[in-house]
Figure: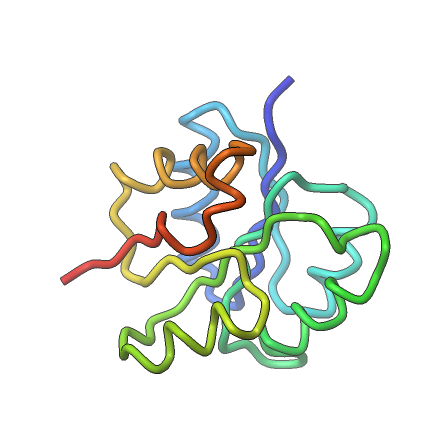
Amino acid sequence: MPQKILIVDDNDANRILFRDVLRYNGFETTEAENGEVGIQQALQQKPDLILLDIQMPVMDGYETLKVLREMAETRSVTIVALTSFAMSGDKKGIVAAGFDGYITKPISTRELPVVIRKYLSEEDRAGGNDNAIEED
């Protein structure tokens, strides 16, 4: 059974890119255009991992994360931030907020499935932020 990934990003092109790369690599995906819809999708679809954009209208990634971590149904889901921020302080803030890690945009389409698989494995989930993708 393919692992389910929820992609929450307000940018259509980003959602399509993530969806296409992940589906090509055997994952099942669901998409949401903002945090509010993302929460609804998370409750309905019960994903194994959520890719959550930080900057979105309606409800940003931090607010969405807070709600997801407060709900019993989604508390233990692996949640990875999608961000265009690359500053050291931003990275620390993302992890401190409760994300399991982060992926910086633009993404490496070759590395994305490898990193996603690591986040989904039990061993690496406990390791926190070691699997972040950063593009130079």
